Length: 121
Image (cartoon, rainbow, N blue to C red; front, side, top):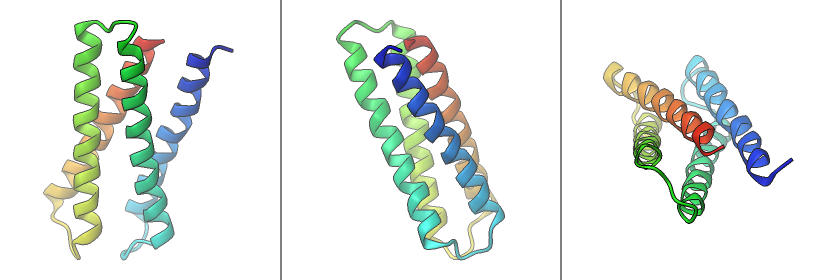
């Protein structure tokens, strides 16, 4: 198994765990459990860092403009998901618009990250 295949497999599992953890937090009672929320946030930051490292390593081999666009959009959506998630965690009662923004940014960022990983394969 190549190192790239291993990287993709190792990143797909945390992406799934991140989405599953987010759904679990959403369905759970507020205030969110500290350990669950902390694990969710750390996993999100770790995924963003891993994607940034992977993209800059792939840059050395040369990325097409489509791959750069997808990488930039995935990064923006995932960072927006981190920001809206932080706002959800700190506000007592979040507005429906903030909840929708977090959900949309999380799903869009994850899907773009998966598409980017497939293109980098």
